[in-house]
Image (cartoon, rainbow, N blue to C red; front, side):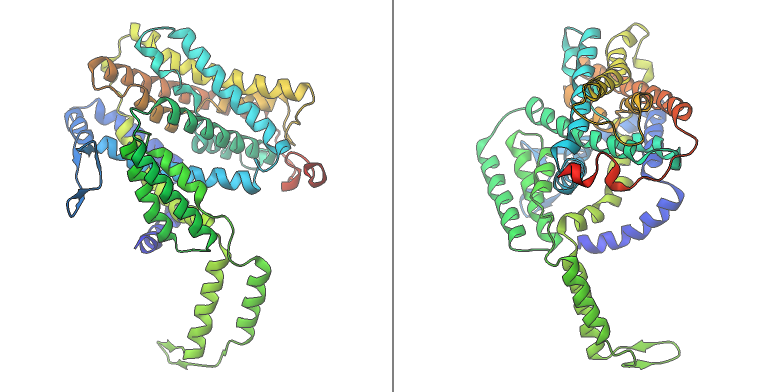
Length: 465
């Protein structure tokens, strides 16, 4: 069933990729939420957020927590966003195995930049809001939204050096790791050991299944769902389950490319082109042709690792369903509830954390270590471009909104008020960072950039060994 669903979604993705991309759809959903939240339909919007989600098989309710049905808001943030974090887990594993985090020298600069981009924003936030309930939101400006940040870079086309794109992507991956750790440690309500032990057993089964070369994606979806369900009951935030299951998915295919080429060559050479029956409006294959085609399909699937296959399957669903829906249910800021004096509190703290904290943290940590010769500047980048891309790091949005909900999850009046203010700060900080970063890079980027070899982004192959 999941594969059939994605067979439908993939053509839609192809259509939307030509007309509208995920970042634009995310922006539209955000704008729609703000309009509805400040219109006469605000009561309907708030009622929709609190609408209970009930799905029961037998006597088991799949989307309940502590005996209560999830609301629509909780379903999106705790269930659907687990799929988003599952994709992040797959991306992190891929980067660690073969990407820009696969060696110390490749990972050093993005890791250092990300550390600076997480520590300094927290300090800036606490300088503005040093005490009181508002301090719970100190982690909000830690995040970088890779979709929007890369979307800004994409506006410059080939003017952007490959090294800059890779640096920003690797930085965002490390940033996600930091956010995941913060969510796991600081945003867990309670702790139940038994569900965690069950989830550990389930993840062990997933791991063993990978070692046994189980390549049916349904296996990983089903066991991943039950791991998520156990995390939901354990007290740890259920989105962490998505990341951990992502780590368990095998990245090694059954067949390597040499075996794939040999098998396909043999199948093609032995394929009876003149077999079967042809008509004006139809063609019927014979049994030998069907057997060979099925064998070729089997060979193709065995040459793609489950990690890549699953990532390719869920990416359109995350981009075109999960994230826009997340934005719509979380971006409903009521501007009338924020007074001018209150703007100097949480909104200013979040905005300064994103705009100033991320820029200073990423740039200072990166340039300091480059200056001392401990790491190398990415090919095609200089100090000015590093500063420009550091400003883009202040586009927080998705994960910042997510952490805002965790920080001020209280249903009390003050909790809801601080959450509304935090969302406003996320919008202001992300928007200003994006606009300033765009105009800086528009001025700083060269009019023409020579094509770079992928291996030369950070260092040569020999240096990487």
